[in-house]
Image 1: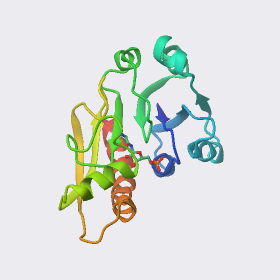
Image 2: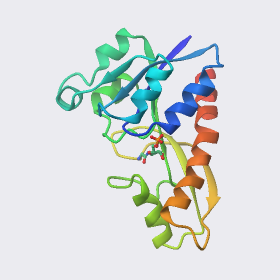
Image 3: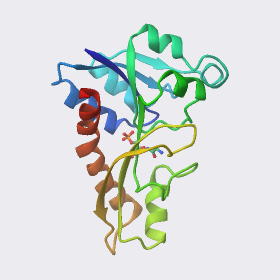
Length: 188
Ligand code: GAR
């Protein structure tokens, strides 16, 4: 059984689809949900599935051990970022080299980096009159929304799209692909 942790700051819709899909996988266990916000929606999802949670403290995360010991003690082998808005400290990247992945709601390297989250991303895509957008799943390095790309999927940007309608289309792609890519990576 490979134990993974999901890191999320928000509603946790991706976390929910991942947890649901992996509940049918006998080789992977979502053993921990980590959040930087004690009122994040993802915590309710974790509690619904009886998954332990960890609320992290900024000081310890960035200036302490980045929770490496805690994660190792729990046997966490792989980290999935699903809407986690803090940068990952080098200490954690070094402890989990090649074993932290992220999803971003755009076709990186475009529309990534600091400030590019939520509806900002989709509004920027619309403002630039892009004809297509999509999702990127990538390994995590020291920079926001950077690191080697594992997978991308695209969808159209329609003439009358708002950031909200576009976000919905992109989110459907996320839910369709992220759990499958995770299963594939962890089967290796
Ligand atoms: C997702 O769209 C994810 O791609 C994005 O946060 C959202 C979380 O939604 N991540 C980033 O923008 C990373 N830079 P969720 O809480 O409903 O899963």
